[in-house]
Every structure is written in structure tokens, then in C-alpha cells.
Amino acid sequence: MHVMNLHLDTDSQILEAYKTGEREKAATAFVRKHQRFVYSVAMRHLNNVEDARDAAQETFIRALARLDSFRGDSALQTWLYRITVNVSLSMLRRKRFTSFFGLGEAEGEQDVASDAQASPDQHARTSEFERFFTTVLNKIPRKQRETFCMRYYDELSYDEISEMVGTSVGALKANYHWAVKKIAAHLRASEFYEQWHDHENKQ
Image: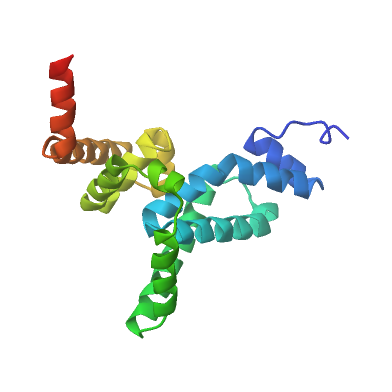
């Protein structure tokens, strides 16, 4: 009965609740706790909102189906990261396959149409600078981009990232350093830097 009153804030509490019969409550807490992280990882691999949502959903379906057998050899977030990457890469392979054989063109046309019909509020949220910054991120090497995003967006420590991706802390620090250096160079060469510079001079 003690599990009934337990607040499911930590992964260990979620796992205990799931394995002792409170599956629905534990599953809800599990998804709520990790959905932002899973979606963020999927988005970086797929670079498409709808695909990232589908990948996140598929990731949680697979994870919940295997949660009973999770042994705790790694952190739960590390385990989720690996599932998310596998799901995302599988989706990319399917998209390349359908593209190669000329399939899926109707879906592509639908995506363009639905994006054009996005509400003004949606366009406002996706600012010009955010689009520019996404373009910059896509220009830097994948390992540097992933390290930067996991530090900057996901706020993970180098030790946590190292466990997830199997890269040494030293190499991750180097990846982050070069990512920041390249991003800064792109920003300095952009119109945004000139705007900020002019704004500071006027103050």
C-alpha cells in the first residue's frame, strides 16, 4: 500500500511502482518526466516536428514494453537515449528507402500544405533567429552538434553524456569547445550580430 501514496518523482520510484502493479500511474509519470528529453533527441536526429513526435511516441511504446525487464545496468535516461536514437535512425532509413523508390511524395506535399496553414501564433513562436540558429547547428559536425545540444538544451553533465554516447569526457569537452567556436563564428558573421552591436552602442 505504501506505493499507492508515493509521489513518483524519481526513476527508482517509477520503476518500483511499475514493477509492483501500478503500471498506469507509473507509465504516466515515466512519460511526463522524460518526454521533453526524448523529443529533443529525436528532433535533433530527424529535424522534423511530426517525425520527432512519432519517434518519441514509438520510443515510449518500446520502453514501456521493456520496462519490466530493465535491470538498471545504466541510468534510465541513458537507456531511453539509446532507444530514441535507434527509433530515429530506423525512421531515417525508412524515409531514404521510400524516397529512393519515389514513394511518399503525397505525404511530402501534405506536409508543405499543412505548414503553410500554420497559425500566426505558431509562426511567431518560431522566430527568425531560432530558424537561423537551427541552420547554424546543422552546419557543424554531428558529434559536436549533439554534444552542444545535450549540454545546452538538455543540461546534462559531461559524465551523463559520456555514459549515453560512449565517448570520453575529454573528447566531449573538445566537441563542445569546437561547437561553441563554430557557432560563435557564424553568429559574428550574421546580421543578428550587427543588430546586437548597434543596440549596445545606442545604450
